Length: 299
Image 1: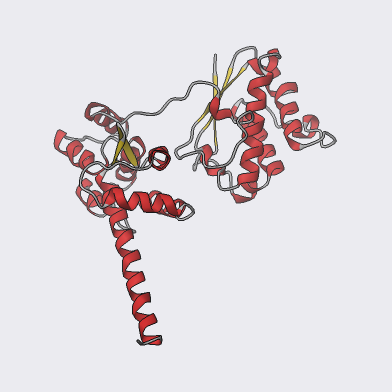
Image 2: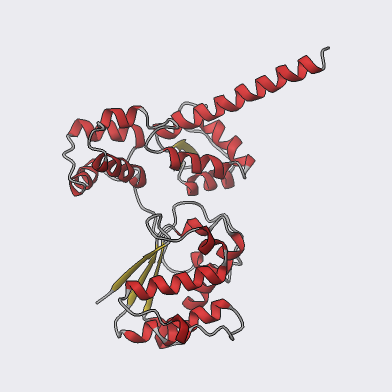
């Protein structure tokens, strides 16, 4: 029998203090694992502060306690692991530990019981040593777009009775983007008075159901000016466009574009509407700044 453990998701109780400090993160991680396996918290017994670092203490807790309580494989699913990416030093150490476990499992039977599934929704933009990264071992799986049939099946799981026309409306805005489809269904399920039409009408605005997701993408792009310029090119053309290969790869990794041969297209109309408005905001601000400068320094 396999045990599935979810961690890092927005529904977990991990807060900034846990994510920003490696020792706190690893202790929280061990505690979550204990609870998920239905085991008592034994951090006081197996977390040896005298070890060289907290990664060794965490490894010890897994090897000497958690994984010895079962003879069956344990599938550890780390969902939304990109939540730790902003904390670069912590993320590098944590992900390096996962890679070390992968390598150690080749020689030790205890860690062979552990199966790791690492789920992330954005590009791995933190610098990782190629020999310390868990992302270049194992089997990479990219979630494909949902088909209309799959969208209707997912709607039924949310107890929503979607017609073919409603599926087409949703796809017209977000395509088959798994996360965006799921977010829409989640909103409709828990806000029964909101119609699909109303949800889609406001979707690309700061008051819409995707506001947090869209704002996160925009904020992330601000740290990479070259990506902002590349995305603006994509937004402002009709159809596909050829970009420098690394920029195209990064935009695809973030989930903003589809790759079509050597060209890219924007992934969905939601992104078109939202980012078009953001770039208009930037132009308006730049125009105002120029006018203010001309008033201060007249020709």
